[in-house]
Image (tube, rainbow, N blue to C red; front, top):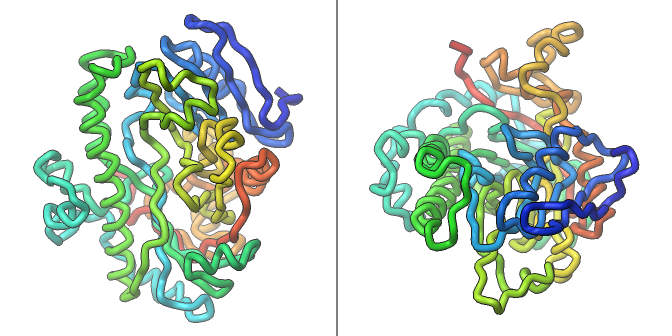
Length: 405
């Protein structure tokens, strides 16, 4: 794949005809063969119309991450995965960059892994959600970050690319933000398990999919409420005020709009239902998107070129959701222990600190395990999908206070 070009179109033979597979990735980016193989296999699922690999494409558990898929009359719950509604929430913090006291803040951030002491039902109701649609055990996870690559992070502006666009958010070069990455926790897992037990990996026809979509939509909204509560708990612990800027889900399935179907040359007037599945892919049609790197690299606030729908169609109306993994989790400790100690992984080249008492997770989520976020974002720019607004550097990253059991 060394000769892969940005937006290269690869036509594949599939069970339902030639299905286009488009890669938004440059030859200078990291691309594993396993990820491409997974992308091609999914493209051959019954009902598939198109598959898109974004610059952060990497292998998942059977299906690629950093990808979007369009199907006709079939919904695939396992393409969305277990963390329905996982995404990024961004809040402005009422402190200026020169007033940050990260050492003091680090001492104050305790107990964010613990069950929230507030009223989870009331919190969900403020988001228009019926708390009884989830079990008490599922709702007990509300406001917790979870494991894996999830985090909450205080960030400061590093570079401004478009001051006017940044000002529309109420931000400037001295602004501080809080970024929260989490999803639907055990709720999404339980929903997926239910459908895998009933249907295996088979897709659901549109009529069959209605019960799943109702649960999916609830979990998607629950995940947004979860990120908001994480931010609330974080700000409360630091005695800061926050203002919401954006919330974007990157694990979901949604009906394709007629205008979008037309851009993909699909017959939206034929009474067919088209579904857009995203697994680790952020929408490019819902406003600003934050694309984080690793805990030791920059994050980028970008403006998708939503006025150019045909161009966005070339990437499945999606952009990258992050840097994307380069190393398997199981390989990280062996690779890094030769050169680094735990204390080396608790700080970054930016001078930022990482709160993570889970030793294995420190290694699994090391910056070296991820692709180059600058390259990922550059690929999106070169493909004509986004404009850069600003970059942000990490100040304090919270992963977990729990040690490995």
